[in-house]
Image (cartoon, rainbow, N blue to C red):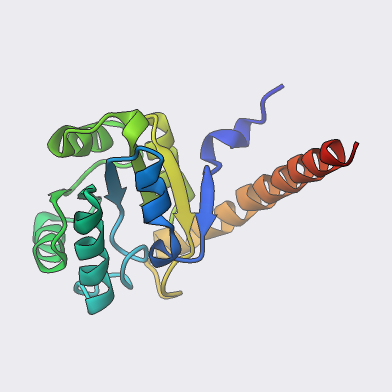
Length: 181
């Protein structure tokens, strides 16, 4: 029986959006990347920094289309997108609904099979991206200071991640045992 929590499990984890091997992903045929902003690329509410600008420049050089997807208001998302050099943006995205992810892919001219998502929250970012059929990367939040509703969700995320990591360890253990035979 499939675990009900699996709908929230990321496909991959990384310490940061800046630690992901985008070159390898491009080599695997991925063409578009959708990013959350707050606590994924910069601390909550912070402007685009040099690291974010360098990342979007690097992605453009690799031939990736990029989009920002945020539940935040347009002034925040637009100014970040412009400063960072992101390809396009969707504000008030309604995550975890699928529509925002689909609009971002439409703007990037990509399909779910060639698009990946990077975000820091399971219940909005990862779940929504999985519902839209995207490969997901969960990254650690950049800064511990968050709005109260997010702090409360983080407690639930810890429970889900506990079961995710336990299942992942079991699979790796089983795969390791099979290789030895």
